[in-house]
Length: 352
Image (spheres, rainbow, N blue to C red):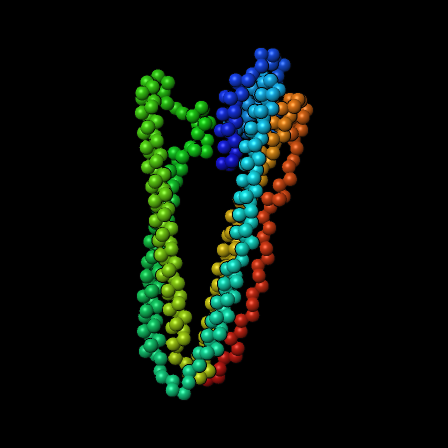
């Protein structure tokens, strides 16, 4: 919606500029109400941006042809920039879905673990690793406790960040401030202009304070999340190390088998996490694509209406612009198939 709101702002500015070129003989130009009614035929509420377009269309239709063409071309240049921006955003979203490097990392780690497992052979001079295993397990438990505590702190920071950002959102009218200023500002008309300015100063200070609190809380939560990820990786590495120290009934054979089995389990977990991340990325990209499609159709409709306004202002042509559909299939997100899992076999369990 940011692109559409930006168009609204620019259209308002163009309207103010367009009035300088209004021709005196404009009695036959379509009225503001006529443009508004036409743009409302889709049965949807008329937002401030489209209302600005209607006002702009009325003024541009009253301009001399040379000035009218200049006004329309300036808006169309802006529209093309916004269309290009939508295409760029779609490209980035598509790349995030197509990127399957996480699955490749799982495959590489599996190969490394299985190669290591082949070399985990306890020779003739085998010694009992029970004590070392118990010590390793104690270290792992301590690391895991650190991770759990960190995760709980991160969750609290997440809740705090959500609350502060929602508190900021309740006063953030940056997406519709023109509409709010014109239709919703409840400042009493009987008050003084100085009081009005003081109220706005206080509102700005509160807005900036809430925004800073939201930004700082989000940064703190993100920092804690990275810290927790480090603790989790340390605990996972220690767990694998402990598995290598597990005492076995038949040490010459069991050590390699158990290491292979653990490698396959880790590979399965890695792929599960990769599939979750892939699905999440696809869902996010699809949601963005739907929003981009709505913006694309709106911008193309505006572009068509401007063409009509600059040439004839014909009502039938305007209705055709509003009714016309625009192909948004290039903005579809293509989700690739999940890569097939590579085989991972620990072999037969040793006897004994």
